[in-house]
Image 1 (cartoon, helix red, strand yellow):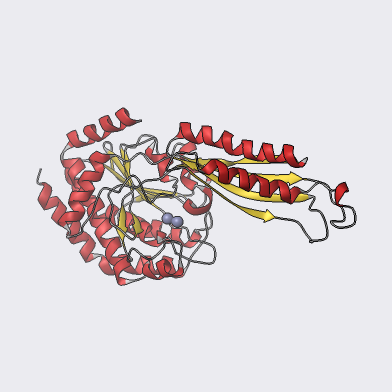
Image 2 (image 1 turned 180 degrees about the vertical axis):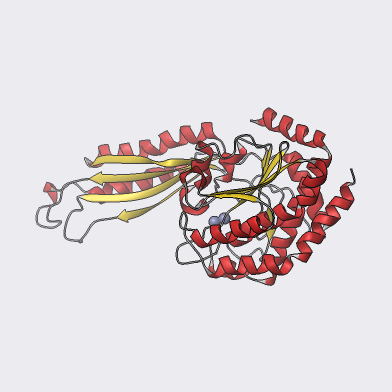
Length: 390
Ligand SMILES: [Zn+2]
Ligand SMILES: [Zn+2]
């Protein structure tokens, strides 16, 4: 099987469609939609896939804006994931318009390889990455069952073939105290705000003695109503993150102890609720990451394996990576000083560099599929690696 000829065909296909892909990306960028409300984006993406020979199904997993598009049949079944949700007030400040269209472009570009070598290619539309962990719900409904490989590329400020993402769970906390005149009769009050402040102090003390990559951060959403009233209610939202699931479980208990201790000390009653989605850490498949890296390098891009000691958030792709051999590389579209989730990054997601990142990502994804369908032993190697590290 002629790998280099099929790769050249994939690159040619993306170049031919450059204008269409760029237009689709700009259209999604100019019409930002929040998680689970990505009605236009999901319709445009599925329509384009349908027009180009894919069989599509919109509204899978009981999520109206999730979709599945497929071409070809049988094994290996390789999926590209599309994200297309925007951020409140910031629009496409995470560049998910580029993720969506790179997945679609890569899907179309792999058709000649699938025609020649067999197997199937899927583009799976995964809504609400930012706020609700859409892939976690989709995983529960079996959306990633029976897949052999899953890949997606996220825009960023560096080209990296791997991504470091932490296990993460949210925590909602409330303290209930007793209101009283803060000057006239403070001794009659139980101060719910003080309980919250003590919790922050306890967490700050704890933070010195936790593992390097773990993170605890939070905000106060209710700190009382008036300075002359002892607050009878306070509320906060927190996130706890860790390198692996076991340490996350341990850390969650230690963080909770900070709140329990503050409740005891203040006399305020504690109520709490852990978030109903839990992000899993990213399990990078290095067999796939190396292939992707070589393909990006062949397009003239400098791309590294990410430094595992820095730069990590959490993503619902982590949950997918625990089920199927996966990669979630980054393609740079902005200089390193630009922060994601900023207005500058939103501009970059509609810039020339943004489109270039999209096209290169689509090419490298499609070329990686060519590597996989022409060398079935690499699929076995990726799966063996996955089983070993799981
Ligand atoms: Zn984001
Ligand atoms: Zn993102």
